[in-house]
Length: 257
Image (cartoon, rainbow, N blue to C red; front, side, top):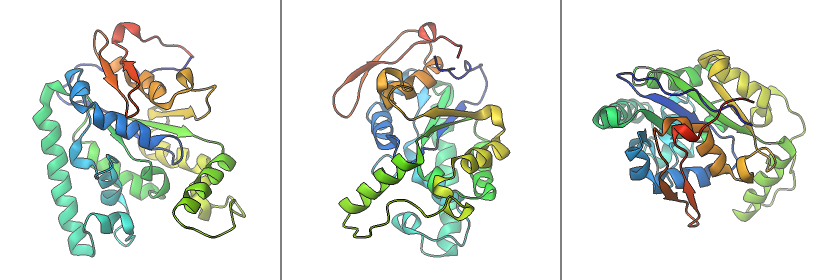
């Protein structure tokens, strides 16, 4: 049995759960679920900030904020960031908007849930992780990092499949080495990078295999992890493919390994 996160303790600030991927582990499904059920989740004390999202409900603004100043990419360009001045303005505006959204929710939001798999693929230095954590620390009581880990060969095949669907024609499926330059597949490095900044007890790793997930389902597994934050009693919410779930109430959640 998975070890659920410890129960939220009453505080002036909410606790935050940051889901960092990894890529190719059902992150889009989780993000769509969170967005579709945003109002229902808030009724149970869970805020899913709209201010951090793009149109696909991925909290990419966290990553655009945290990446090194000189690491321009398509993600930043999609947010209208073309130069250092744009970046400075974006950081100021986003920080203000996120703070306002969390403060406006007030005590209705006992927990803030954020999700972007680009935290895995694009925040590749401890300094970048620290910039993101420094953004969140003044706004929340503490921070838990949820990460789903998938066998690297399966990650590579899934990534290559997406590449082909987008019109790619290259033939290299697997990286030649798992060196530091290939941080995408270096899961030890990923865990170490986040643990150095947040502390090892804050890292909640899950294995992305059907036998390891609750009922073989990523969304159900994620809900089980954050279930202790829902307060008393279940509520019914729907996923993007119209499956229904009961969010576990505090009385339904059990600890242990």
